Image (cartoon, rainbow, N blue to C red; front, side, top):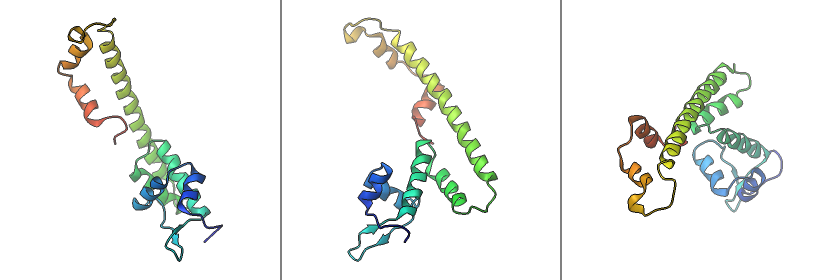
Length: 151
């Protein structure tokens, strides 16, 4: 084991994450299994810290767990050609571009709905509530079924 042994709470604190996040990434295979103490405590080292920081950075960029798994394969095989990494990132950029367009459409719909009611009044007369009762467009249904952040 390289470096000093860290318990799970120390690893979480060092990386600005939560203990349950560490356990989750372990279960998902994104973080190598830690060594165990004689008392069966998880013991991590600086390699785990670096690995978890990589995963957390990828998540902060809204990458899926599968995308992160692919990137980790390349990170762990430094002699491999990184062409697939470029393709993965290009695909992710396309996904982000699509989500931005969907969110801009959502913003327009919400602003249009908000303009229906310019003053406080009885709920029975609220144009926003009436507007929400109308069937939505196909595009709006698609956005609602996927929800923000889903892949």
